[in-house]
Length: 248
Image (tube, rainbow, N blue to C red; front, side, top):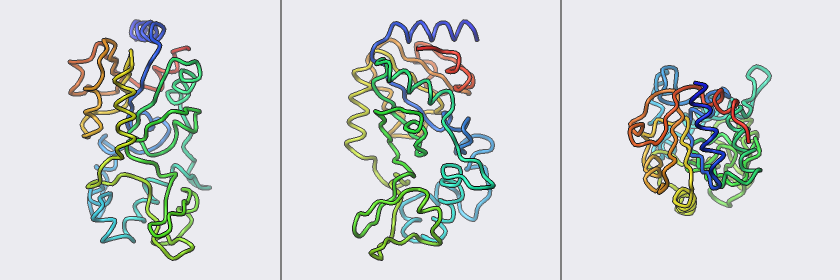
């Protein structure tokens, strides 16, 4: 592992336009549940599969059950309660923010919806799947924070009477074109692309890797991915632990 850390540090030191592309594994070390691990949401028991409950059609047809799941599994750790500790940025989030502040990281592209990158101080973040921190009235467009939605009962209603929808890309919905274009541009212009905490199986997000044109493609993940063979360097392990040993 020491050799891996040293090599990663060398690659970072020699780069000026780094982009980090991350997924759920970056936030699991902050206590945010993922989907596909052994104890992830897909392996828990619900009346409906999580993928169904987080679909556009389920949101439209079963709003009460959608928001029960949304509050319990997507908002609880982000908001925190007296019984449940609020998720905080970990060493990976903090290192990325420092790297950006130093002018070496040009963008973070994330599949996560928990806002922990911004909480750590990252400024240029492309949230491919939106954020639970933003919720909007479908009638008048008024914005509501995660805390407000968490405290409401049943289907959250705006002051105007309209239904409030999370600013999250649900299954069956398309990604935001402006965000996708920004992420593509950042990755295409990068001289180093670090991919961390993602299984690279969710498309179209996983396809962004193909826009990288450089020769410093680094994969940092707990488990092997289908893209390990095309990476220039692969490190398997805890991304928080690995990043905590790096310096700017």
